[in-house]
Length: 310
Length: 209
Image (cartoon, rainbow over all chains, first blue to last red):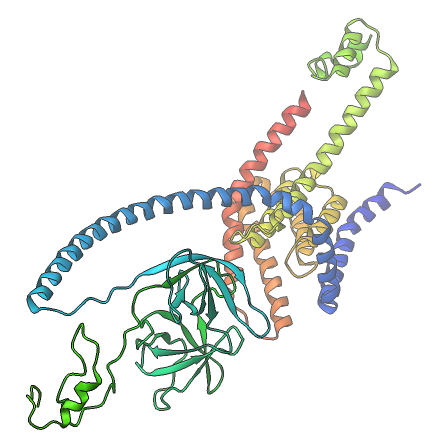
């Protein structure tokens, strides 16, 4: 039987022993920190679900907070939209006024004909894309679509009409290896040719070497005979130095609704465009409403005939 | 007979059915061994509750504060509350804070602590020892001195952490964490003190009933 004195002595030793053990733990933690971390990690892993339960109210509160914040933002954006709507209504009125004024001024100046653009929209009925072809078939109904018309989606250029059928047209996508589209670099104003190579990023070639395309530069179609200008195409990106490609604006991987420009924009250039005639024609080639006659050409060689030109 | 041995009020107003039955038996003068056994069990439960409550509260607080809530000063608060709990109970009710329970609680808390291993346990034992040794003197001097002593203990803990971290990284570290931990611990202790006093009064009232 342990005496009271011994028991008191032992009781007094418990605290120093425990302090000694604690110091031992501190030293062990400093000597083998990895083991201590592993032990703590194991403990935390075992109580992971409890932590989840503890964090549930906080997460729920944050979710409500975000919802309330979203509602607040919605109210703010609603007010902003109303304000913008009022401004848009104001600018719409201004635009209408300016349009009327413009028309009046053009009428006073005897302005030439206005270039009108028309378009037809249709659903993509078949995707004909394969390893060597990138094209889609588009249903346009009874609309008369011309070959070479530009096709765009909601964002940018998709391709050009390559074949025209009774109700369906084939649109050759800009990434097809046969696609060649002249484009204009918007920042520098230089021209280039966008050439498809059956990859998602058509190449840019034949640009002015003194004005190389810049990274991120936006490009649009170049306005010329048979091609509507100013249609958004994409942005320039350098996959490797010296090889610019175009990242198309259009979602070519998921084409559903496509719009094809259907206006009579295929303007015919006058003969020998860009050259100055050495001599004006003696006689008109033909008069309006009359078929050209071979006899008229002979009249040039008749010196005493009535000369109306030259 | 039973009425003379055990006061009636000791369990006459208990809510549990067992105690009501016992009280009925006592009123009828039919005290038996079953009733005595119930009394013994209840006393044991009170004793266990007294011995374990502070340790359980301490472990619970440390565990909750180790959850990734992302609150600023969460780790520092964990240390402050742990040391504050030890300090309060060791100083005012040492019977509620057995040394063995304290050591085991410290080991468990060490698993969920972010401090260098063993430091918090060491300073818990130091706090216990200081509170135990200066208990009589501190009870005469009032709250302020105990508060200051508690602040010194927390300062010691924070400085130990700091020194060990400096040794580990082999470079000078900012002393801002020490100041922050000290401020948080000293600032939160009065609230903890009031809360534990209230809990103690509730517990004692319940045990008296």
